[in-house]
Amino acid sequence: MMKIALAIHGGCGVMPENSMTPEEWAGARRDLGAALRAGYALLKTGGSAVDAVEAAVVVMEDSPHFNAGHGAALNENGAHELDASIMDGATLEAGAISASHAIRNPVKAARLLMEDGRAVYMTGPAADRFAEEKGLPVEPQSYFTTQKRVDALQAMKRHAAAGTEGTENEKHGTVGAVALDAAGHLAAATSTGGYTNKPDGRVGDSPVIGAGTYARDGVCAVSGTGKGEFFIRYVVGHEIASRMAYLKQDIAVATDGLINHDLAPHQIGAGLVALDAQGIVAAPYNTPGMFRGWVTPEGKAFVATHEEVYEVEL
Image 1 (tube, rainbow, N blue to C red):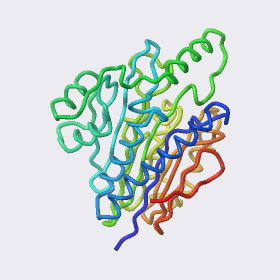
Image 2 (image 1 turned 135 degrees about the horizontal axis):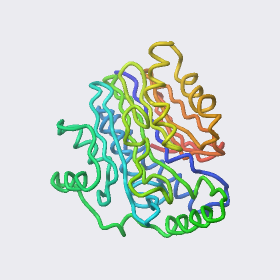
Image 3 (image 1 turned 90 degrees about the vertical axis):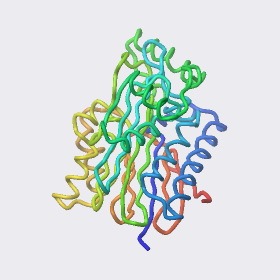
Image 4 (image 1 turned 90 degrees about the horizontal axis):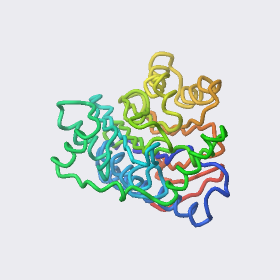
């Protein structure tokens, strides 16, 4: 039996401890644990890496604590535009959705688009129609809205008017997962509401295959979080895979090189989770914290927000 492993993130917008209540921090850690359990349960029973990353991301899309699905960020017009993607490292098949206004779980639509095979990427109202035609739940915009995101939009508009910077927690966040299954296959998935007060129609790196999401069997699986424009410019996911495949860097060196060196001059919040073909996890970030969790090949599970790491039951 091959090793199995899983890693998730809920965004690197985890900043001051006082930006959320103790109850909110505990709730976020609880939902990270639930996402790990959902994905790992499938891996443990022989499920595919694609199944596992989809299941883990769905839990975080349904949680109000993360910027994806229910609880997603609001754009400059006070609307939700949702992005997601998924990639199968065994075949390099992928599916991506952007600017959805209605899909309850955008990662499910990305999965169905990948399996449909006619397109890798679908956007806007057409993506919403595709999901509905495939029988996926669609929701009114109000479903995605939480008071926290309304408050964040108002805060970001005040910052914009005053020329000041918002906190990472006010600005952005993303969720993602990477997995290695018992057959040795890798997969990655990412989902986001983008950043608060983003321009209408803006699409970041989360649905861009090779940037925010990438998986290639025998090499690595990557899901990113942070200022997506730079993840697109640096093609971060594919770049990590290339450094590992061609320069023979290990996953720690390759991921650290991107997050803490290449992106450093831009002074942006950035992080990611990645797995290599042996199930070794890397989760670098350059902010004071990042929602994250992982299950080792030995079956030990952990979640974290800042430096302190908590072991959780599977």
